[in-house]
Length: 70
Image 1 (cartoon, rainbow, N blue to C red):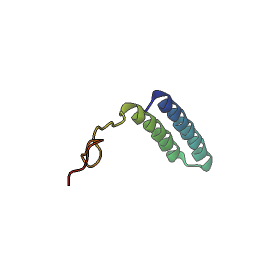
Image 2: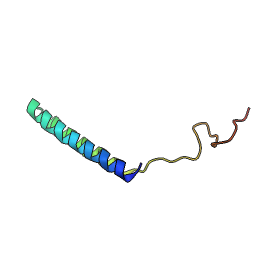
Image 3: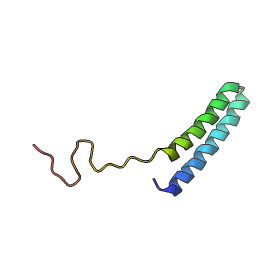
Image 4: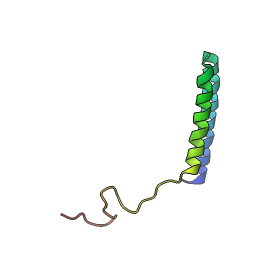
């Protein structure tokens, strides 16, 4: 995933997590608001930590452009 897309997605996730944090506070959910904030931060951290999987083979073990055996 390109860095520009990762950065934009990170900003959106952080903004939604912060909004959900304050929304949970207005509802009176004291413990869940911190869980929501942690989950949003963890999602951003995990997106940057783990790279995108790039495979040369498809799911069936057949390389692209190759004919399947019969």
